[in-house]
Image 1 (cartoon, one colour):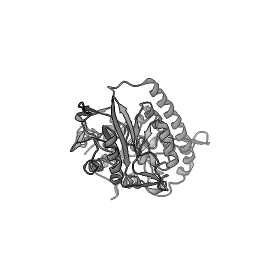
Image 2: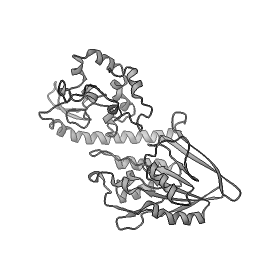
Image 3: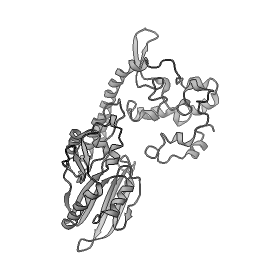
Length: 389
């Protein structure tokens, strides 16, 4: 079962978000899911594309509170599956607040949906399932806090699969008799819940875990090949789009503060430069190249310097070849990697109040967050010599 957000919201100006999300759905279909309920990442692409996601998932889409713009249900409000002679009733809800938190100007599906109150819409459905089935499961795309509230306020629920950044717990959470699975974010963990029944099919025990999907799980070569083929295609698509942006970006710099590149910093700060050059920040871009994600705009910002600013890194920059005098395009190689200005600000601010002289832990956490670097420790990083202090 899935509680939503397999889809990927690409930043404005990016390409491939919908295609990547559909590819993810088709990949999940290989796992033969029984049911899913959507999150805001799927709703983001609009009702028509939501239907495509449901088709690609090849399992029952359920929602007790998601309606179309005319107030009609988009999916059925429940499904019943029988496993080992046990009837399992499944329903789901999605948070209106979370969906409306997506900026309207970027939200393709902003006007496509209505939402019923999650708790009130669940009560009659759970009550009915309680009579028809042996186990009632709710797929709750609400976040961890509101998932616990469901357990407290909706009688009859046996288990909740918490979606939307629920956080990682190695074993199930529990509210009263309700078991809540919190399997982390970004598909990094696989959650499983085993229920033990007595002869009357009453739950008498449970055991659950959320295991990190790391190298201990063997890779599927066929799936790996399909993923690589897809990534190669998306890299070309992104490169083509970047080519169209190159000339515009090259003329947008104007007379203002600029990123200069680490070679300029090294003229005076050679000792710090030497230390930086031996560390992981100096090789940050290569990690993208190794994964063929050097044109993936959702990853680039934490592997280059000045992303999003016309004077910083660009995937393609319009140039004039110094030998032939002809137009040429390439990426802004001088701003690859996480350089001095990534943390201290634009080089032309050097010596001014606008320069950041002491980098704080908060600055590091913009990239080394729980989702991307769950084991990051600021003090250990400093002690390891990743930066002068």
